Image (cartoon, rainbow, N blue to C red; front, side, top):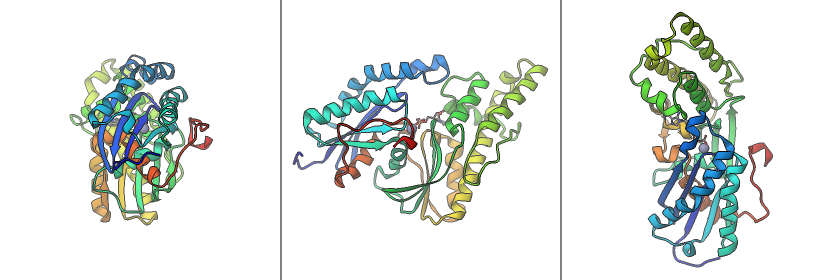
Length: 339
Ligand code: KG4
Ligand code: ZN
């Protein structure tokens, strides 16, 4: 292991459709670069095969940029970290195999990072860090969970989605509204111009702290079908109100479950993480929830909510200092239950 005075770690993220690299030096993120893949827009969702190919094209330029912005070279690295899973296998393999190669050629440790845990680690970037136990609502395009973070190595999942993730609910609703993929940010922007009470949609009733978005999807589908039978321009004429109402339904549902978790478990701080944590209504709602229960609220900066490698590098810093390293025979996993 290298013995330079600085602790320099390169983080890599390639689990879905964003190719990202970031450098952490000691406790500070010095670069955070992301190449977002536009190719999927035309298909209304991520096409795994295309994602892997784009990662191959993007990875080296993104890594070079991250090193350059941080003012370091490959030889300065003390360790390399990468998302090991969950995610799309072909996508993960691009970043992970690269990380193994760097680890082997530079003789530095390989650090495995779980992508979902990393979204929570995003809260520990910078000086203001949540106190434990920390209750986190993790909402992304692939995952929706309520996690009680007791310590860095004890993250207890209190509830999870039984079908779609919250981000998928936004994206699928957007597809029905003829909005481009990913629809979450578009619905967020349009919602600010609409009335959240103008249309009502139902959500599924499932176990106390679990989520299900399949009922909402069906409710939107039938509602739009009936309205379009009366007026074929219904969606176009009502787009802002529809977006506001759908966003209101999703955010209220997420917050109602998070409130239950908050009432049932001891915690000192609360927060949201993942791509949907970029949603303006959810950010405001969680601020209000924290104020109501007298809890400190933590919401990552936008660039650390959606997929990024700074969160991978932040998680890696802890693992590096605690000697938690991977090996060259480790493999990627698509789901957490494969670990
Ligand atoms: O965490 P992320 O970047 O990737 C995954 O790990 O899935 O999350 C992407 C998801 C997409 O479904 C996208 O529509 C959603 O986050 N998203 C939003 C917003 N920004 C991104 N959803 C609602 N409002 C937003 N402002
Ligand atoms: Zn993610």
